[in-house]
Image (cartoon, rainbow, N blue to C red; front, side, top):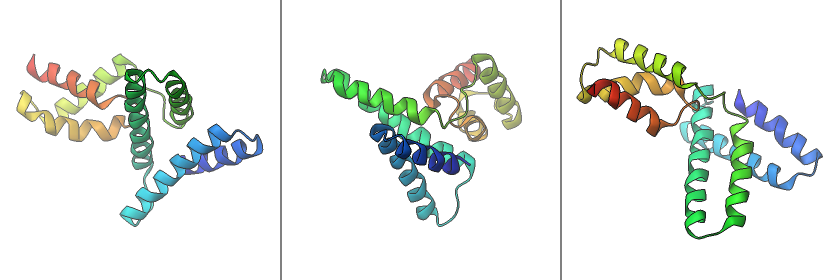
Length: 147
């Protein structure tokens, strides 16, 4: 589970006195623990991946805002934090592997047109959680169903 990896990384960062890395790992641990408390149960690996992916998404949004505000110092800080968080996610899917997963999901759902996109995404997203950007996947599924 990712929580175990986070705890080990947190201990390692504390030993190395890497305050920046320790801070972002603590944030991730807290986010995972809070989600587990909200659901009143242990999280599955997929749910842990979703929590970490959510933190990464927020970080990317922050980077965009900092770039608009010309705050290069904060952009650099956020980028370092994203690198730390991404180390806890599975490797990203290659475009070819993503196309294969989309094809499987379309076939399993029986989708034939654009209004069926919800059925496809419901099957697809748990399989690729943390390994592909949701917006990009949505666009690829739309293209496949439209054409």
